[in-house]
Amino acid sequence: METQLTHTPYNKILTNTNVWTRDGRRIVYDVRSDREGSDFDGTRIESVDIETKKSDILYESINGACCGVATCSPADDRIVFILGPEHPTTEWSYGPTRRRGVVLSPNGATKNLDACRLNPPFIDGSLRGGSHVHVFSGDGKFVSFTYNDEILRRLDTAPGSLPHDPEQRNVGVAVPWPERIETGRNDSRNHDGNFFTVLVTTTVASPEPGSDEISKAYEDAWVGVDGYVKPDGTRQRKAIAFLGDLISRNGNPLTELFVVDLPETAVDFAQKGNGPLGGTKTRRPFPPNNVRQRRLTYTADRKHPGVRGPRHWVRSSPDGSGISFLFRDDNGIIQIGSVSPNGGPIIPLTQNPWSVESAFGWSPDGTRIAFIADRSVFVTFLAGKTIRLTPRSDNEPDAPLPLAVVFSPDGKRIAFQRNVPCPDGRRFNQIFTVETPSSF
Image 1 (cartoon, rainbow, N blue to C red):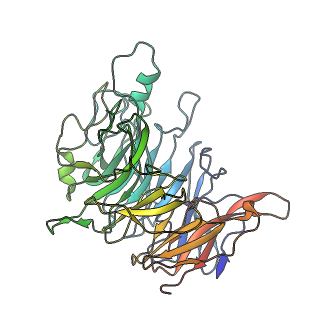
Image 2 (image 1 turned 90 degrees about the vertical axis):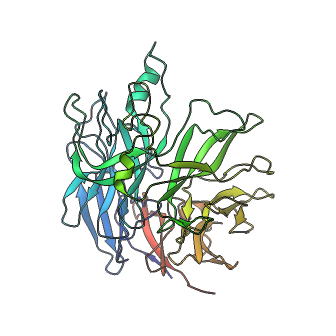
Image 3 (image 1 turned 45 degrees about the horizontal axis):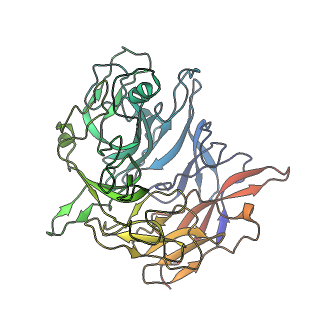
């Protein structure tokens, strides 16, 4: 049964994962006006109770800042979200390199996730740019994010600048730290943070064709609730899967699936690798010493090579045995595939006659995967059966939106969105749930 939870005359935007509170009672969202989030203009984080349908404001930004992209911790009642600059100006407005993560506690208190220092000397544990799409690890201890570097952006746009790393998206991790990361005030836009933050991926300016070098790392996900089992039987407890853009041996752009293995303890993230964790005037922050980046898929020889389809984030099965992503089958239909974090062949999870049209999500028990296709919400059981959960929408504007399809913690409901008309003719994104069977 499908249920509409919200009816207010403004948009609600669900993040693509972790939108349910850990008790499964509430769904968290933001109020940006644009479906795709290109206009980052929301000023509130809200939640709706799935039983009473009552909405509450959890956080409201001040001083001209905007906020959004909220996710919940699976281990406690914290929420993390993006906050843009306070007192924005023409020279310093919201953008990929000008945003931070903020952690909201149940009592309403907030604290910066990441620190930022915008002038040298740069500081280990601090960023020099913006973080985005923050997601707690399965145990709620660490937070992953994507990152863009303000220092390198300035060099990219400055005439006659020194040779430098280009500004490229990367993936980072925030780990709890005993001391606050203090950045000083050599720039008015510096801010302190409460987690130790590092980049964990490596990108290059120009990937060598046919190599595993990448120019962008993005659309990441934690592997498993508690990592994955390696071929030798030991458990890798912390790892992140992500998409990487490379150049195939014939010179064509190609997106493939990668994974980076991480240390288990926070203190290990402070161990210097091939360069300063805080970066230099011309180099982005370097990953810690004990991380390992690996390529998982090799699709250049497929009829339809690469990770293909609508924008989506890779997702791991709860046990970490498979990492899922979108690809085109030999008929050109967008399906969900999976590959082991240890590498190996792509295993199709869906083999449907219509293309997947959205982000997707795993059920907590690892038996099902939910997505949108053919103007409906679907669930596919790994045993092979696909079930249509909502009637097909005759009109495309009324179809489920491709933003998010997220299982509840008990696996009984799926949260999604529709763009719904109001009596005055305006349309707004609203939050829906649909019940889903646990077996067939």
